[in-house]
Length: 81
Image 1 (cartoon, rainbow, N blue to C red):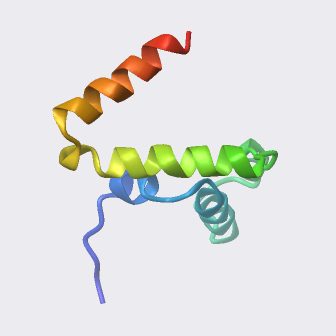
Image 2: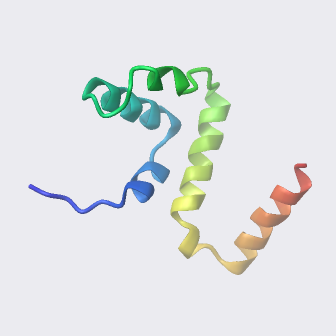
């Protein structure tokens, strides 16, 4: 069975934990060097994982955001410098 999946869309939809699992699997299957395991950040706190998941959700749902939602996100990003 073949699936046509856009790699970028797939990875963006993954949580931080799922990305770590993906990297580990790619190393195990020989698609990435062993050193790639050490590049993955294992020091996430729960709140950082929740934050990362929320950002991934927003990115995946970009096309369904209202203009007001977009402006709110842009405004937040500009205040955090």
